[in-house]
Length: 171
Length: 347
Image (tube, rainbow over all chains, first blue to last red; front, top):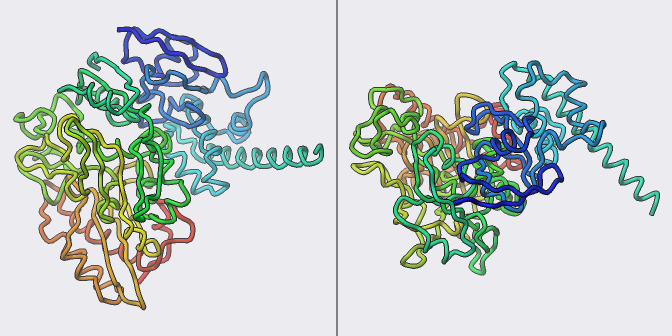
């Protein structure tokens, strides 16, 4: 039995007919939507390389059956930048050398975006390390990753403050 | 992964009627989909319950109890400010389990029915009485660092890895279930089964029954000022416990009026011993007393392999969790799971 689902991926409405309920979101993105930025590491929810946002919450795409996602809004690494302008987390990873081989990086960045929007880690490095523990880096670029998440957290908080001020000024 | 029929019922009644032998309920999928990938589970039908209405709220009932809908996500519950203030060790336990991504997906009902398991259970090429009854147990005589030291049998020595279940057991939580013959309640103490001769019967759920809510009784809130969950593991984060303890005290005028503590990762269910808790009542808090109570809780412990060290570790974990609880619930809760290693030692 096939299943027809409609979902939004990186802001674009997509209608998909799944002929097999076993397809994970990870395989749907990589194999059928030409979005290979989301990586397959362990495929068992242990490494975090497949992290994406579903309805703005970070999850493992490898453990999510695509058939369950009718009506969902999915954001992958390909949907973060605005044109040529990188997302602050992407920019911070470059500035702080938060990677070596790069394979885990899309998952690290998506996880960091989720962590920052959850708002519980703040600018405490220990809480950031704890909050990022679902993302493994076999090159062990953890120091740069922590610095990048810290810096991005601050940049995004400053941007929020600035835009609040703009709103007050224009009000 | 074996092929399965997928259905997504729109109501509880529809879901219950869709159940058939060999079917599985799908919540967040963090355990089920993983086990379907390894082949340890192969349901012929997967019933997606995530869209069932009315099961995703956290509410206070008129009798003072707190009711958590089965579909509330683990992270949503742990970060709910009112819930975390009332039941700090439950929030602390949830946040010490799994990863941010898994906690965002996993439901609280699903957390309780995650499989009691070990590495051999997850490997379909190893004999396992829990996965395939009658085939034997590869863990006995095998690698046993994550295995039970109490309540195990010669059929199975696996532990239940849920952190969430441990404080729920200590606080006398109740599991509300719906099934073909109506709704009923199961006390946490009776929810998970010890393996005995039938390790495949893991919980008190009858075939076709589904968890709809978890309820914490009004009295559970009385422990909020002195509650901790301490988890000891092989790395700081994202690992199962080697030993854990949910400890809560109600202290009045410097004396323990009431004590609750349950141990995790030592058995197929949270381990709670009434006699050990009673030893703490009407006593002033103190290291020697906590150590004696922990010793009593583990009185029946015995290694299931090369894991006698876990008995000592569990005893020290419980002793320390009680001392942390006596020192008081930290101002910032849930506390950082790793932070207990960085805190000054308590009496």
